[in-house]
Amino acid sequence: MSLVAIVGRPNVGKSTLFNRLVGMRKAIVDDTAGVTRDRHYGRCEWCGREFSVVDTGGYTSNSDDVFETAIRRQVEIAIEESDAVLFMVEAATGITDYDAEIADVLRRSRKPVVVCVNKVDTGEKMFDAYQFYGLGLGEIWSISAANGSGTGDLLDEVLRVLPPDDAPDDRDRTDLPHIAIVGKPNVGKSSLTNALLGEERNIVTPVAGTTRDSISTYYNKFGHEFMLVDTAGMRRKAKVHEDLEFYSVMRSIRVIEHADVCVLMIDATSGMEAQDMSIFNLIQKNRKACVLVVNKWDLFQKESNTLRDYERALRQKLAPFDDLPIIFTSVTAKQRILDVLNAVATVYENYSRKIPTARLNDVLLPIIEETPPPAWKGKYVKIKYVTQLPTKFPAFAFFCNLPQYVKDPYKRFLENKLRENFPFSGCPVQIYIRQK
Image (cartoon, rainbow, N blue to C red):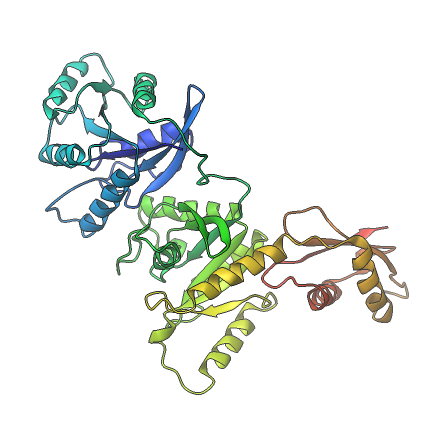
């Protein structure tokens, strides 16, 4: 599938156009310059043809932005891998030094370029657009990304310059498992994504809150195939003061809701703090499979049995849902990165496991008969039948004569017996007691 890169200086409306082309609010949009930092992919359909679109950060030079070099590198990567480039400029400001510099970069790339003049909301502003012929990049197309005017003619031109498609793209396949990397700011989520992909997919700096959008990437290496989603760090509500960070946290929560497996990363030096537990509880609440990754293990002071004691303390904090893989890593040193992949694959297999009803009854009914639910006011509960429900997460229905008398302790007993006899490590197991 062909790829179109949207490039330009900061705050010309690249993310607004990207959201319009993909038909949803995938990229965060704000009046503040420099909101977008990482490459953000989506899919656009026009006149029966689909192509991929990549949103990039604003291209600058000699600015005060600490992310300037990293953003420029992301833009250059997007131009290199694209089949055509949508160069966005702004009608009101005219040709700036940044516009001229980007035009030079695009001329050297020898990629087909479509010059798109944004914020042409009225007929009067149309006259401001003609000056961009001075860039020497051919025909210009006047649009308003905010209200959509002119985007049809622009897309017609994009289709004209794109090469024919050779093979289908896997970037947005819906049948693949979605793996979300979540956690507090600055625990190494983007570093883990880059280490797994083997490329500079996301910007990494020591500054907390570097990642803003939730960045989805197709992963197909070492026999594993899934969609890998890097998210913005989630801080406590009381610590979130900016609108941008609020949007970032909301996107991260939405990613958890739509993921299959969540990789929760914590900092080994600070341990499992209250905010880490809040994120873990959010994963549990949404019934998602989980792998816990303890990063920066190389910075932790170690003695005899340190790892064993650390893991035991973690599982005590996570109880009762403590049956999940815990991987100790150092992403910068590439330690045990593949263990994370293998644990994710195993947990996803457990998450999607379906157990035949006959096998469930053969295993669990003798256990229930030997240890039945406690009698309640002289009334005995008899569980006669067990079946797995057709839900996305593991859920089981136990049919009995008096479901109202089966209390939570016995439900936990049933869950423990399920985990002992069937591999559900890393997955939440839901027990329902129903009237037979």
